[in-house]
Length: 165
Ligand SMILES: O=Nc1c(NC[C@H](O)[C@H](O)[C@H](O)CO)[nH]c(=O)[nH]c1=O
Image (cartoon, rainbow, N blue to C red; front, side, top):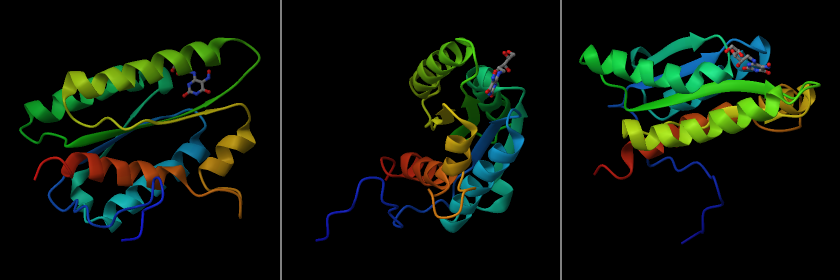
């Protein structure tokens, strides 16, 4: 049997019964938009129904962890629980330590949320030193890198299905 490469998309995961939340920050809008489109594209390819892809926004990446908890709680209360959440943010290093502190705290808190909410919370935050690095990871520079949003969509479907059957 062929050994799958790391991160290779495994088409065997079926998202047709999933409800997925995408929560995106509003900083670096052009890059965010591309990442959100990439995640949506892959979710649809894996069978998630368009009406089951729910998109909300928060001001910035710092608000992604608490926003994800509020997002989860809102839809649980509505009786339409989310099966996974993809927080999406783009952090680009400036001239101060602000970047480092937000990256560190957001990363740790998103990891903790997986265990607190007991659903997959995918790490969809780009932590880049330059705008070009972020553009490349959103697939916005021809021939450079693929759109990482697609990986996040695939991870959400895999993690929300593979251990439940
Ligand atoms: O500063 N740079 C960035 C940023 N700052 C705002 C922060 O996330 C938060 O919204 C505010 O501090 C208010 O709490 N948010 C980002 O998503 N990317 C950045 O590159």
